[in-house]
Amino acid sequence: MSPAQPRFPRLPALLVLCVLLTSCFEPPVDETVALRFLPDGGVVVTAKVELSGGDSASTPALNRRLAEVRRALLEGSDPWSRRFAEIHPPLEKSSWEKQLGEVQKQTHSGALAEPRDLAAFFGDTSLNVSYEIKEGIAELVIAPGAPSRASSRQREMTKKTLDTWSKMVARYFSAGEALYRYLDEHPERARACLGALYADQLSDTDKERLPEVTDPEKERIETIQAAMQEVWSILNVPKGEDHTPDELSHLVYDPFPGRLTVRLPGPPVAPPEGFASAADGTLTAAGPGLWQALRSLQGRWLAPDPILIYIDHQRRTPNEPLDLAALLRQPRHAEPAPDATEVRLAIEERLLPAAVYRVAWRVDPKMEAPFRWEPGEG
Image 1 (cartoon, rainbow, N blue to C red):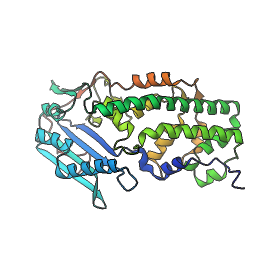
Image 2 (cartoon, rainbow, N blue to C red):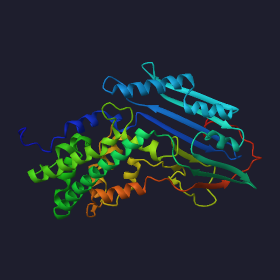
Image 3 (cartoon, rainbow, N blue to C red):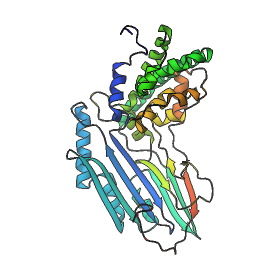
Image 4 (spheres, helix red, strand yellow):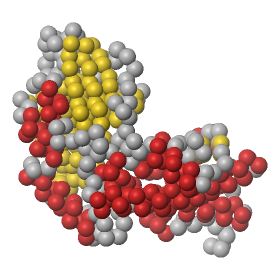
């Protein structure tokens, strides 16, 4: 086959670069906080800070930011260390993971002595946190306040990003609708077109078995690839900046200082409010941001959503091929594509946190059991 007639379209240069650099879809500084409640009512708080990027290919501003974060983690002057110092937990541990001498991850945990300590731990945030135990029932209530972490410049930058990004997302949905409508009319071409769309994530065997695409099909595929590249640009650090646009959107809209998860010692006594529940019972408070807002629109205009399939696979299983057969079995659906105004309104609706995050469960304050930082730990 001659180079002029490729079996599947060549990916744009930046798309290939992102395929090679899996970490480009991860925030330079990823902060999470986990609350693990114990059967006797105690709670273990674990904060993690993970860093990615920071090399000759990064912007000087980002390198300076990462260097400052590493310095603070090593000195114990970072916000999480200050929060633990505020409550003086009777049991506490901290660890670093380094690569080539540089901190890449810090994990800091503390076992709180009193329920009221949980409110004090989040005292420097806009969260109003209440944890109480009455008559064998423990209840956690988190009421978000107005986020206050962003500067006026960051707020203005995020407003401009939302204006531009809404147009990009609208173009993406339009390109996705065009491809899915075509496949509705020509279902026998699904393997060729979807295989070409995700070609860089397929096994060599699947690539070799892909039918050739026609020139009109190639144009559709390249259009949606270019649109996908535009949309995920908010996950990359712009030239001269030290945050991704998505990180800035969390500073502007997200009242949580990090992605919050909650693990209970038993089932809740009533359905949780505000939290998203996973199959294993873990509760998550998904702090609002631009990318999270887009994720919440999954299936509204396109199902399955090509950009979420691509990035979820790249994040979770980058070294495993995408299961093309399973993808082809999924029913496809496309609604008329929205314009930029409709996209912006939908995103803005999702940039507000829940009014309250509440969950209650049973505890036994008299229960005696060996303390473990993690379940099953010796």
